[in-house]
Amino acid sequence: MSTQSAPPTRRITINELKRMKERGEKIAMVTAYDATAARLVGAAGVDVVLVGDSLGMVVQGHDSTLPVTLDQMVYHSAMVRRGLARSGAAAHLVGDLPFGSYQASADEAVKAAMRMVSEGGVEAVKLEGGSDYAEVVRRVVRAGVPVMGHIGLTPQSVHKLGGYVVQGKDAERAQQLLQDARTLEAAGCYAIVLECIPTELARVISGQLKIPTIGIGAGPTCDGQVLVLTDLLGMDASFTPRFVKRFAELGGALTVAVGQYVAEVKARAFPADEHSFHSSAVRLVPVAEEPPEELPGVMGAPV
Ligand code: KIV
Image (cartoon, rainbow, N blue to C red; front, side, top):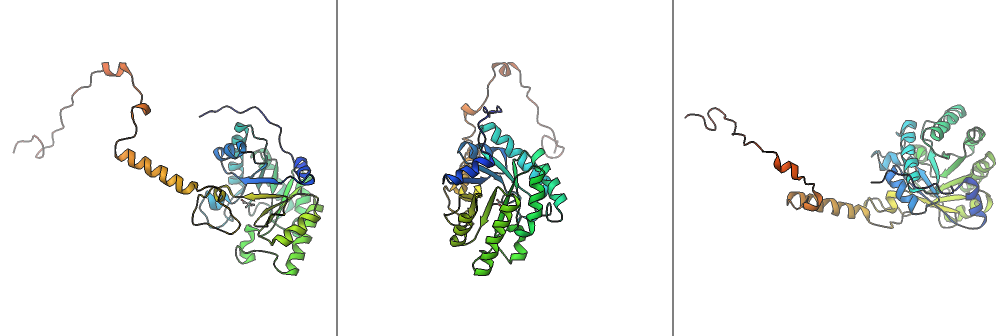
């Protein structure tokens, strides 16, 4: 395995993402939680890598994102940063502020965002919430950290929303989400994730904002799309929400590969000679024949 970093590439900045929207070029964003995934998605040419707090479900096995801590987000972000550096990828790196790290006060949000940048190596943070978070966004941006908004189905509010359900289906809630998007843009967000809202609403929001919208379950009219890496790779055949397209079936392929390994170990077919090391010197070392240990009354003991 190589430990060398690839030569630095021109990074995709928040300004470049805005220019992509202006020229109608779609933005491709995907999650990564460790260095290997970051290296691979970076090499695939994604524009934005998100260290999402979805790692609470995907990596940690929780049934929500709520238990994820700021220390854990920093830890995973630093891994992803190293993986991207190794691939020489141009991708812009964003990390989620986890539940409890920014809701209580703008001061806490600023401190959390700064840790994500200085220790985690991200270029921007993402936080969930609408107009109520305008002041938090303003303060974090003023501290020098770009903020990506996230409205619609906001998983950190799963209990308030009553489950993982599509948002903005009635006129009143749709109007509120449009207002939230406008307020977040005015507060300084450089992009906004729109999660699980009707295509019609995503089209209006995307049309009214100058900053890019990144959709997940928000239809094709957003300026970009984001998916959780393990979903798009088909790592979990039992998780099939409507908004996910599986671009591969790696979960099944992985189980087949590991099953083959198990079978070959049992059958003594692995490791073969080509996987083994040899030394002529080792043959010169006499191997002493150890007499079997005598167990009284069992082996070799007088009866
Ligand atoms: O945590 C996450 O992965 C996210 C994306 C699904 C947008 O917030």
